[in-house]
Image (cartoon, rainbow, N blue to C red):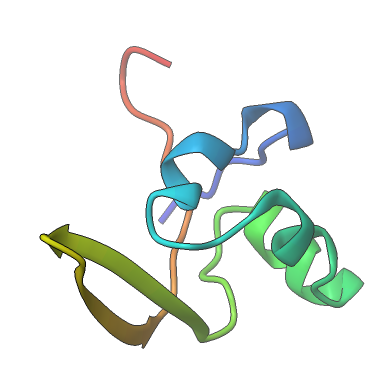
Length: 72
């Protein structure tokens, strides 16, 4: 499986913010985790939250990985 590398400017911080993951939270990860993310490997398990309606929120833990689509 071919992995792609990503520049820091390609990280979709606005999308991650929808799940409660701020730019600062990502920057504070250990260097090896940042290297993994920039090489298309999964992040460490992180706490996420999402408001679904009328103040009700869902909290969980998950990983994310950056994927380059065919259109770039």
